[in-house]
Image 1 (tube, rainbow, N blue to C red):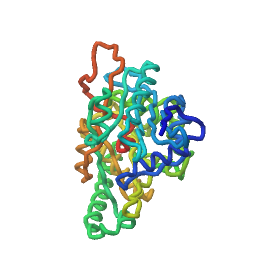
Image 2 (cartoon, helix red, strand yellow):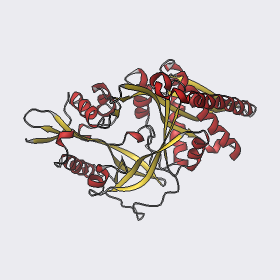
Image 3 (cartoon, rainbow, N blue to C red):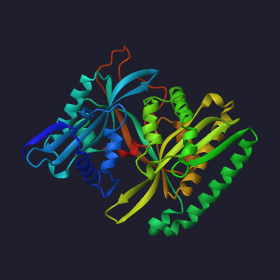
Image 4 (cartoon, one colour):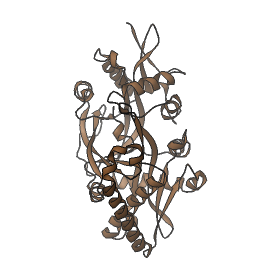
Length: 387
């Protein structure tokens, strides 16, 4: 078999979708990709280049057997901007693995990143996975920060997964507890001129657009205060990924927090099906994309804590309204504040991926891996989708 290594050609999206669906469903659990989603997520992304998508194909039959996607973007660390090649969706069909295809694709991605004068490369990997040990570490990536996944089901889960019916009393108790806790906090904060609103943009897109520009500015500004490793959203990127999704479940739901009618914080999530193919069922998840509050607008630590509770409890309410069965957060292990709140709200915690860095061309006197006073916060809605 002869293998051809190349970049994306028009029409490859069908083969890439098939590749991802086969490669990432080896455990019997995964998310379905469609050709249109490939186009939206990779090809038509503002500022994208066909060269960012590296493909391995069977030279004779033309079948796509492997790929790696390398988005060129700017990430912030310790107040500085680093041109970064962000690695995603490293995939090889099962019967073509362990013959060097992924290694060659990653080497080509490194060559491409160097040609773009990237300062570093980042990716998220399974900390116990084969790829991290045998592929990423030998090629120069190093562990930088661990992530944790927080899950919380609601009563709707019984409809899709009846075997958990015996746990109904416990789920009902937590839902009632969350409801009364939300009402108590809302009453307290309303007296201080705080307000919360839920907008399902799949139902009221025009209303969500009213706050879109303000939300983008708040995210960029507040992230600089609180986080590292986040992608600064331009107007074009925000419009593409938040205002112009390709299908209904890609429309975000927003939970907006106001102080004296001015937006000071928000969270958002998508509704997406996760498939358990080996067991023959699927579950609708609420996948949290961001949760951000402008701390400079909060006068007291006590109020800040209460506002986080208000935001997350309102998000739980919104997931039920959008008919999701489980909500999923991904947080950096160093994000102690949000992690503590999620634990207090009885979220179930499991180990997530590890954020890895490959320093390609760091010209600063401060070399990687440097000490970070603020936690990593890339797109938290993608962190559980590590390759």
